[in-house]
Image (cartoon, rainbow, N blue to C red; front, side, top):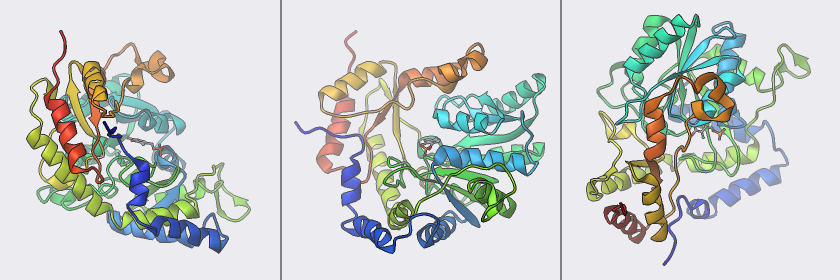
Length: 387
Ligand SMILES: *Cc1c(COP(=O)(O)O)cnc(C)c1O
């Protein structure tokens, strides 16, 4: 029985025919590998795609998020020691970006059924920070699993409190707000708050052949500051105004990303129709399926198809026996990791903790065959725990 891989990276690259290889060769032949025409071209294309003014290519997604926060600190919009509201259920990079910038993660619990931040828990986190004598400077929303966070509501909250609204868009390349979202209607991830960080890690919906990331924003001052910080704190060669770092999108990755960006919308559409088929045909009362996007199917690009099950480990074992590879996103929430448990472990975030025990991600990508799709659906429907 043939294995069904979670995400077959080789099949992804091959699906572009020779185009990716040609892009890599073009850069090799140019003899120019860092800060050149390929990076600039991708930055323009990706800013256009997102509907934002600026895109700055950087080394990876974590650095993109950290550079946004460090940029606002350098600009005086955030002060060292300010709190940043983050989801309690996210990949740890969201939190690490906050601490890397000298700021303090202030967790807010998600809605248990959508896995998204909800407004009342953001309000709670804000008040909790005030009681702890912390000033909240920003919300760092995560479009977890490819589904846009409730940016219209969060934006209202951020504006009312005079704080920044930032996007961790590492899982949501191309997701677009629905028609009914007022000011944010038809705007994409990357153009929904003050600034957004993207990752182009190979497994993301838009993935490079290695590490890569980008900061996307309409804020000209922030874009310039991020560019400077990411280039040793230098705007002009050998003149260093601030103590910066090195975080760059190289020419080979930029050339590859330019090729893949052209097919992103079509690939996301395939993910959507596949997710809709899963939702229509999976029917096991022990397995909770993810919620559709709230107002429009464009709001979810299905980076991940998460199911929740009280017998998660048994379900994973059952699927493994059928040759179906699955992944858990994520087995331990950030506050229970050793890196953070001293400061956060005592509080407890029960929704994040339960989601971490029950989540399982099924294979879902644009290159799945009919027979693979059928086997995953049958695998879910045939599960029952031996209890
Ligand atoms: C992948 C990811 C990141 C980090 O991106 P890297 O490029 O791996 O550093 C940050 N946040 C979320 C939600 C992610 O999924």
